[in-house]
Amino acid sequence: MMPTIALTHDENRGKVCFLCFRKQKQMFIIKHQLKIDMENHVDNYGDERRLPAALCCTCKRKLFRAKTEKKKLESPDLSIFKPVPVTRSTCECKICEIARELPANICGKVAKKIAG
Image (tube, rainbow, N blue to C red):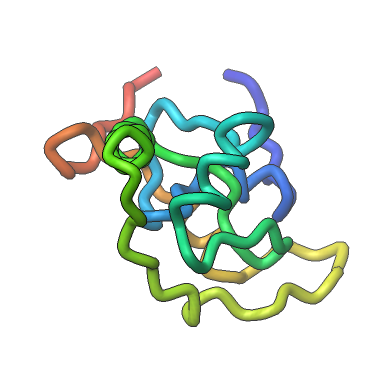
């Protein structure tokens, strides 16, 4: 069995969806065209270190639907994400807390751990 190493806060940002605050098996990092689409279709989108930096499949589809229909998406409440202090210890912020959970499947149920 391989040893597990805790991810950094910046790595965990890519494991949490900016719009629904969930973690799924497949996440899309917000960069390039996806970042432009977020800036144009989500009112309070920001690329701050305290915020998630990815989208799940479901929210990515919602974003593309909003882009096609030339609409804005409902803005998520980002107040749960507090400023992150720079430390060498394990980060205890909301993003890192979510990122350490098991990913949810499409039905919202928690995936089972694979016995090794």
